[in-house]
Length: 311
Image: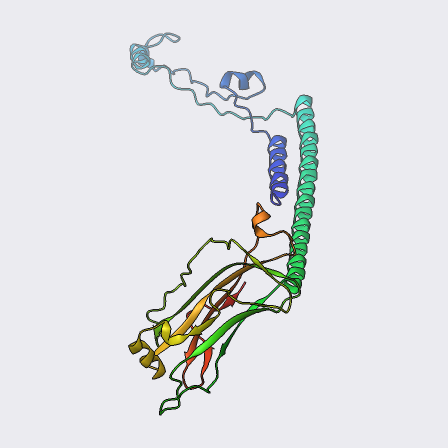
């Protein structure tokens, strides 16, 4: 759109120039002759009679034969083309065309300016909307709930083997709301299993169970409070793996991995429970993946990209 106005100016200027220099009219020979075109025709010389040709004034027999054998010679014309002067109607036509061209240029300029103003207004509105959205998201992020996981082992007071490794592992899991507003926990999925050290049998991307499932009885977690899974928040590790796997885990040939996902929503945008909403809105997630270190007797972050994140 910004190039339309300059191109139109060039086109109309070329049109005006072509109208002010009309091409010369084509005239036939007869019209040129009548309008002052000079035609030069060579004069034919009268035959000169020789003494043997008979009486003067009478063409001889040879002369007649020559005229019969040679028909009338072609006349050679020289035509001088004279351009007609520009008439008053042509000047009026050119003048009106120029006025219309100027009017068209003015209209195109106005349209061009209006398009630029509209584009600038649209850009300004878009920037304002983006700024408002960013500001709103910044406020929500500063006030929203944040649930972080904490895994606690029972300590090193249990029975140890000759290498100083616990023979039995007990640990508990909890999530603390470190945000400023309450959270509504709507879904939880967790796994405790034995995995290879190189993560070869750890699925990527992570595959969580209960996808799209919402708890029948959701729970609110106020700011600073702790959420625990009522059914299973404390684990005895060897009950979840085979005896051979547990021995491999304790000797660090394999790893005991605890991983999963907690889903919750904030109450900033809508304070009602999720079961009362037609539009669920934004769902936050706390994804986690840890392995137990026998030497340190604690859980350390582990897993592929995407296993540990907060949204």
